[in-house]
View 1 (cartoon, one colour):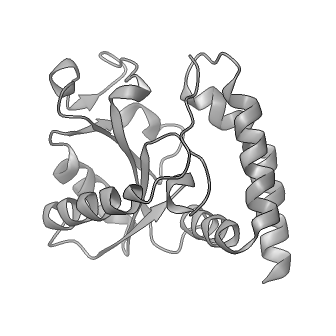
View 2 (view 1 turned 30 degrees about the vertical axis):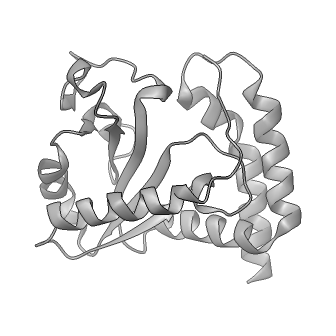
Length: 190
């Protein structure tokens, strides 16, 4: 698969705000915080046009309750990732035109690849103030203020986007070293 990057689009913020409103209504009785993360949250940075959203829960014991609430169309709960990252619940927001093609909950028995062109969001539900939460917020905030780091990250993404990947996880892994280096510099600049 190819990763198709788009130039920064200010409408990504509006798309996030619509999703945020919908997610707040689904999780209304859970103590949570919602943040726009990833490249679509950073003005001027090209990105896959998929909105990354992080939901922080104040109590880790609520992860499965949140997952149960969010496992409604147009969100697909990818429960197979729970083994790899037990403190995170992951969802793919699917465009309405293709939602009928996918199960609401993906398990080892029914997992299928959701093509990037059919995705509108990625939702990560994690404990608030966990390392996962803190690192994603720090990375986003650092790229928002550091033009040099933003350009370095964007250059890598453009170089990687021309390659063929088996899936999106492979592409994400290829960015890991650069992300960790930027995070280290962000921590030392605090």
